[in-house]
Length: 155
Image 1 (cartoon, rainbow, N blue to C red):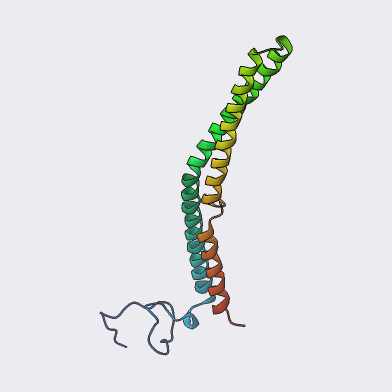
Image 2 (cartoon, rainbow, N blue to C red):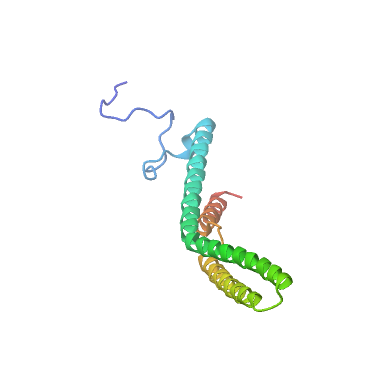
């Protein structure tokens, strides 16, 4: 038996595939169960790693887009706390001095509270614009992967 020195080394199968190999991949019918399971495991691991990386990238993108809304909501919280502090001052002044000094505290409370309400509304609107923190592209990709596996599975 003579061997061709330019021929590729055997891949472990004893029979030649019936027809041309598909894109350089060995015919699954000629592979052992162990080889098929190893290939399946490697493919599944690669797919899961790619989906996790995609989800991580999408979540990072959404988090970066939500930063302005978080800053606005932080400003609303600060002004809201100032409004609460001013409200306490109003109560103290109302009890201590029943006249005009409380009027200034009431006006300050109304202004700070109005500013807090405006910032809270703007921040909530910005969060609605960004959307939920779900990695939607990754979810669609996983659904497509599951559909492809289901379509390729016999029976």
